[in-house]
Length: 168
Image (cartoon, rainbow, N blue to C red):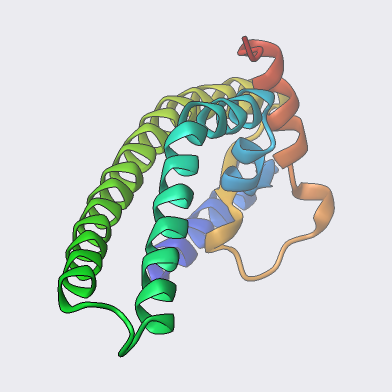
């Protein structure tokens, strides 16, 4: 944070010496998440993983059924039936845990790949937009305590991104 303040201070001193510095603020995360490509990728991920999500829901329902049968039959079930139900429940619980972890890891891996690719593209778009608009410095809002809303170019960046990289 101190280095950011120091850099901005140096930029302002340079502005006094060499003329006006044109500054812009961007919420990179917001600009990126608002792109058509990211919105489409989110929908695609939901579609891709929906069958596995439904399989997990089915397993969860089966587990509840087994637990309900064990609870309702407490004292009424034969030891063999109770043992079989407990074994089934343990197996389904283990399957559920594995499927859930695998699904979570795959979704996260896909998300990271998508965001990394789109993030790189967004950086290129911001650089091009900055050159076109004549900005000397572009600062992400996460490092900014206060700024005038007129300095925010997040919407411009999203529009430029969508134009440069239309969702397919």
